[in-house]
Amino acid sequence: MVQYLTSGSNGKISTVTFCTKNTQKAAINNLLGEPGVSSTNGGINMVTLSKRLSCFAALIICMVMMGLVHAETVEGATYSIISDNEFRDVKRSVDVRLDRKVSAEALRTIAMELKNMERKKYDRIFIAYYLPNMKVGSGAWATTHFDPELEVKILGLTAEEEEKMVRAAKSTPRDVVGIWMDDRPYVGATVTIYRENNKLYLESKYKDGSGSTEEMTESQSTVGSKLVEKGGNPHGEYFVLDKKGNLQAGDNNGIFLKYKKLK
Image (cartoon, rainbow, N blue to C red; front, side, top):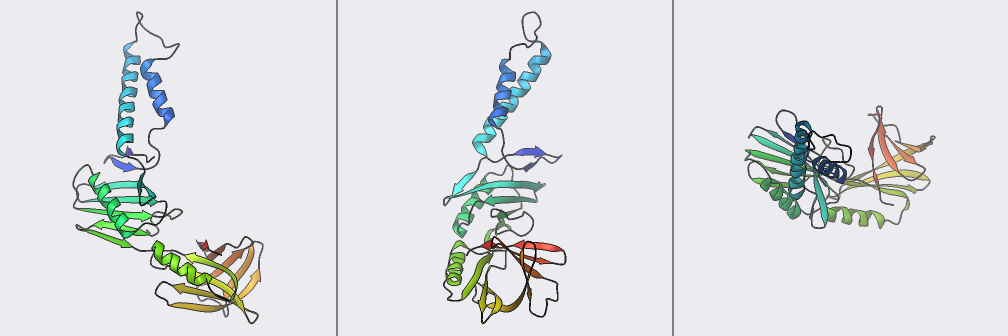
C-alpha cells in the first residue's frame, strides 16, 4: 500500500504505507468511545466530542485515499509512488518504484495512469522509475516525461537485453571465476572474471557488442580478493571479490558499486 501524506506549505505528497489497520482501529475506538471515558450529565463532553469527530474525519479521509491510492500492477509487475512533488502548475515530478523490469508499453500505461491521477493540470510532468535496490536520485532505470508530449526512455537494460547478454556470458567455455551484471543507466554490461594460462582477466561486455578485457593482479585481504588492473589504475579503482562470490568496485573513496551476481 502506498502512503500519501501531505507535508510542507505546498501540500507535497510523499511515500509508503498509508492508513494501517491500527490507525483505523484507533480512529473507530475514539469515535465510538471506550470504557472509562468521562462524560458530563451522562453524555460526552464537548472536548471529547470534538476529538472524536476529528478522528472520524481522519478515518474517512484514510478510507477514501485507500480506495484511490495503492500499489498497482502492470504486466505482472507492481509499481508504487516513492515521491510526488509539484512546483505550482509548472511541473510535477514523480519517483516510482518498480519490483521488476517492464516493457516500454507498460511504462506508457503507467505514465498515463499517473497523469490521470493528477489533481490539476501541469505544463510538464517528469516521471522516473527505479528498480529494487536502486537509490533514488542516482540515476533512474527509465523515464516517462510529458514535455509536453509523452516520451518513454529506458536508460538501463531492458529485460530482453539483459536475458540475451546473460545467456551469451554464461555460454563461454573459459575457466570462469564468476559472472556479474552492471545494470547502471547508460552502462549495461556483463562482467566476467576468468583464468587463462595462469593469468586472471576481467572482461566487460556491453549490449552493442563492444567490450574490454584487462589482465588483473590479485591480492588477498580479510574480506576476500582485491583485484587491480595490471600496471595499476590511474583513478585508483579496484575490485573486491568476497568469499561469497560478490563483486564490488571501489576507488580511493571506498566502495561505490555492487554488481548483481549471475554465476
